[in-house]
Amino acid sequence: MRATLDLIEKAESSDHYRTITRVFSELRRHEAFMAVHDPSEQNRPIRLALVAYLNHYETIALFIRRNVLDEETYSAWIQGTLVRDWNSASAFIQRQRWDWDRTSQTWVYDPTIYSQFQWLASRWNPNAAPLTEAYSAPPQTRPTSQDEPLPEVAIKADTSL
Image (cartoon, rainbow, N blue to C red; front, side, top):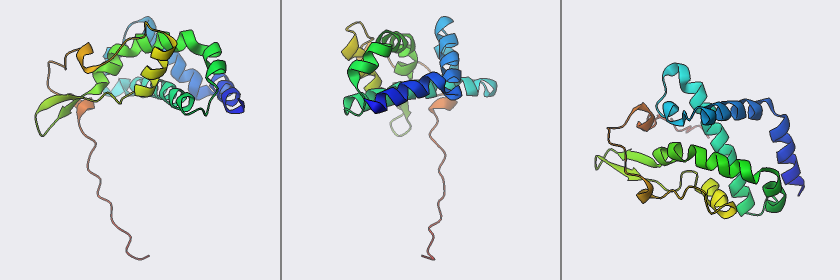
């Protein structure tokens, strides 16, 4: 229970959380989530804020599922908002789940992206968007910069140990 109350207090008082909430709310009000899927350099901070907001929900859902947080208390505080946010961002999340496989040159669906968030939204409301591979077709275009793999990083082994 203490962890749940601490999390709620931090979410209500943290400048970071207030900022990402404001960004998410603006995107939701303007139905503009897809505009930041592959953002211009200028809009990358907006995308980062959106992903941070969604990651917050993913973390909450994981902690509820693992009984680290008290589901009853958290649900009473934010159930409607969480389900609304899931549904609002579902097209963006679905697009994030489609990834370009460079080996096979095809789109591959990854259902694990925001899967905990989906589990919780669906648990709390049967009208939560039921994202699956069949929910939408893969993108019709080739991958964009957001679909690019992370760069290879050369790590030198410290052999002096």
